Image 1: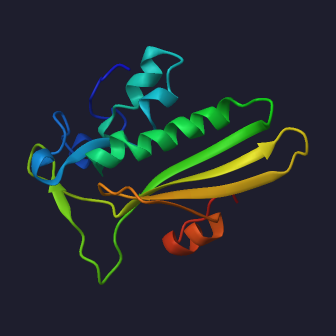
Image 2 (image 1 turned 180 degrees about the vertical axis):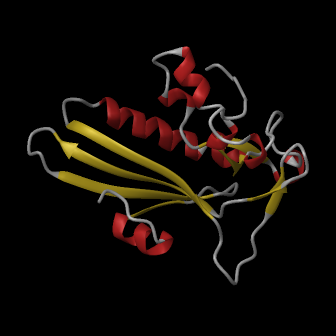
Length: 169
């Protein structure tokens, strides 16, 4: 873990939040710099690990959720990825979803006072190719971005309907 917090060099600096020391109101809202791609997922070399600390890879995550149940889910996904006896390939898409109207969007600020929307929930969409059969199976884990960190499972089709995105074409 490099802890190399920095701006993403290929994205205009003005288009990125300043997260040098987390979100400005970390204590008030208990928000952490939540990685989309976990540092522990990119450990083959130092330079690759450093990319996980780019501000473009961060979203405001509830600190208890981020260091608790979300971290547990990241560990589970790494275990599945490493289970080469069962799976040939594992695709992982991680994302954050804002509340939909009429719910209000909570905002936090970066270190320069620029607003940033707080996601309502995070998700990991997984597509696994089974080694023996060659069959693909998929699942989504959705987790509320709050201290309760309620985790639910759903189909990829349900997530596509909720988000409007197409996963695993």
